[in-house]
Amino acid sequence: MASEIAPSGVAPRRRPPPLDESLYCLGEEESAFFKEKTGIEDDEELKTHLLEIQAVAYEVHPYPCIHLFSWTKLRISRFPSYPHLLELGKEREGAIFLDIGCCFGNDLRKAIADGYPAKNVVASDLHGEFWDIGHKLFRDTPETLPVTFVAGDAFYAGHLEAVPPFTALAPPTTPSPDLRTLTSLNPLRGHVSAVNAISFFHLFSEGRQLRLAHALAGLLSPEPGSMLFGQQIGLPEKGTTAWKGLFCHSPESWKELWDGQVFEKGTVRVETELRKLESDDSAKAKAMSVLPGSSFYLLTWSVTRL
Image (tube, rainbow, N blue to C red; front, side):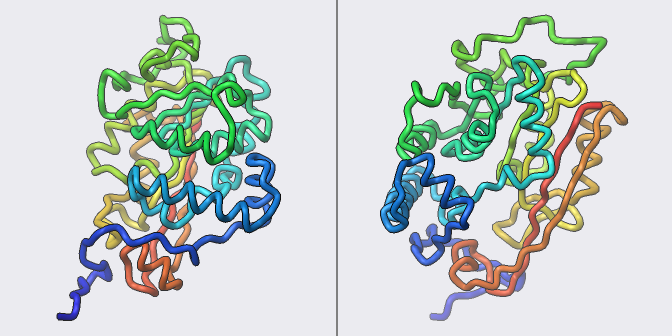
């Protein structure tokens, strides 16, 4: 019997697609980065290493971004907010950078390579196994990469409890914690200078996205220039995508969420960019469970305290 395809262009739900080596493609900058960090100079040896890492990670959780090698792209360094992140690390004493939903820790390693102090970086993910896989990927250790990792569920109050954003008139009353002692993200409330959330918000419903936004806002330092930034699947008008039925915000609804719902209106600057992508590659379309020729959008954003 022929398989049915939904009118929306979404293939029926099925098991995660098998890994496809043909999707592997490193750009020049990515190749140089992985060679420097792994010590592997030979292209074929590097490819074999990355394919082995991918296979192990896919067993932990078959995220499409793992299947599509999104983790090999240096996305964070191409964000408009990236220079400001590096500036915070250089100019603000003890500026804490949180990478939430960090997966292997590729983005934070790129920031550290570009000058962000590793001692001020905190990583967190639901799957602690991914952090261990990251050490295998980059062939480093907790000693050579002095970054604090805290495993936990962002919706569990014992790990990340939502509190109102701190302000200059109502700053945090607790001191900035010793990052090495962290067992949850709660002690960081009001002390984080920058939060990176890539491929994270679109995993959740509209209500849970709002709840997550409130929780992350409560971590942010009230100092002007403190920011949250990231990238996720978006839409020109907010709603549910044809791709896996995800709820996604539009640039306008995303701005309204942060400037007025999460933070008092006029106290933050929200910048967004929506980019349309075409799934013209049949292998990639299959991996994403969409029909070749379908389109989807990436929303890149930042929220900066004024």
